[in-house]
Length: 226
Image 1 (cartoon, one colour):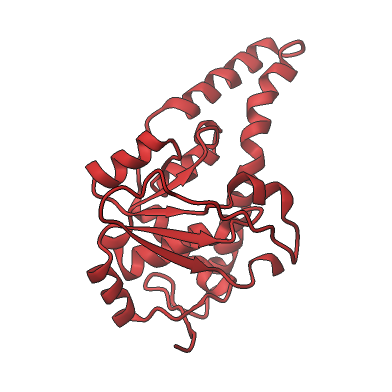
Image 2: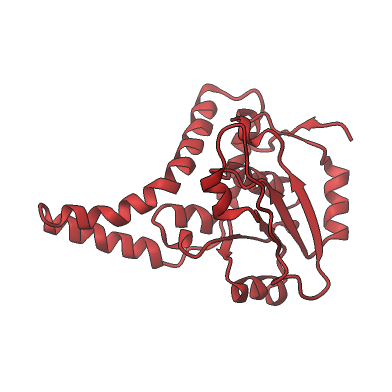
């Protein structure tokens, strides 16, 4: 099927100046959050010798951000429709195709490749899936340490991301009856990929493939050309 340009239900195209600013700000915030978390964890220890009270307050804030319960937030996922125009999202999934996917794959593993250095396309998928087939949206998976990093944790949990630990994935799929989005390349691709070149480390998801589950492969073209 030919590719069609995705159209947002919330943000008509072309974007206004304020919407373009918002889309770029969201992209910068998400990108920076991957580095901001480790920085915030280290900062209180670096400041303690000079500003002990400030460092203590920052440490307590980090603990709060790392452990305070945060859940899936559909309205937050919808914000990533702002990226349709920013990244010129084109897809072969029209309304009819989406309807068939929901009908035939109620409980599925969607494996998206490549992972990339910063997987912005996974959040873009969250906005698209929430708009086109919200009932198909399940959970994402990320390393446990990422789900303890301040700011990044909030973004991931708002997107419905859970730990990659086998117990958490099995519970989400078999008990809560939710589909799974996973980027199998993971940490290896983050550190080994670079602009215009990605390292393939697809791996597998056999730990969660228990029961009658469908496996769907999704290839994101042009990712390393950003």
